[in-house]
Length: 254
Ligand SMILES: NC(=O)c1ccc[n+]([C@@H]2O[C@H](COP(=O)([O-])OP(=O)(O)OC[C@H]3O[C@@H](n4cnc5c(N)ncnc54)[C@H](OP(=O)(O)O)[C@@H]3O)[C@@H](O)[C@H]2O)c1
Image (tube, rainbow, N blue to C red):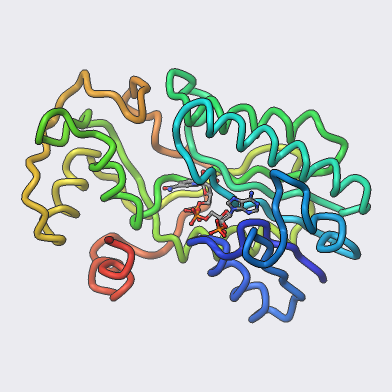
């Protein structure tokens, strides 16, 4: 089966392409440096020719509110238009658990817009909402600075390894579309502030992490369960401690 991975050079995309190829599929990595650009439309018609599935694991290069919204709206609209024209059988996209509840955040308004465009399109689809990647935990600290300290609400948090995200998306890409959302998450629950504190300690990052119930997450208020998936979520196997002991933890820390 020909499966085009849009954003196939990124963290999840590159793992996904390898996993699909290991299972004997013709997986094509599409990104600006392979001549495919979802914003300009360059290369989209050619790469989607003969594809059964398109998987969208792109991300906006700029997370500023307006830039992220423009990226996800333009990219998703172009992609779905070219997929419909090429007769691609299904669209699989990676989003974030809790997206619907995070509309106070500019970045999440962009993900909401992406999900809405997919739901309105004529292309059959599955939207995979994942919890935060272990690889992203330092990024959460970086975006939660108040002065020289990290402020985070002590809410429930159930992150997962990028490798498990890619495995789940690879399986979902080759199964019939559900025309709805499916959730994936990690095998363990933590408190957000607690895990960020642990991650920074392993990186020997001296920043103090404050449990602050009023702190925002990318501009949005969180409730106790916003970041955790529902009971039907498919859970990854990799535990945080196991991931920490793998070299990937240090490679992606920068
Ligand atoms: N971070 C998390 O914890 C988390 C949790 C759940 C879901 N997600 C979602 O997972 C998705 C993938 O995240 P990631 O960390 O794997 O992203 P990433 O490593 O930043 O990769 C993004 C990919 O998109 C490509 N791209 C950027 N602009 C493009 C364009 N105009 N046309 C085509 N491709 C373009 C990039 O190509 P270049 O490298 O060539 O620019 C790269 O291949 C995102 O949509 C994100 O919202 C993230």
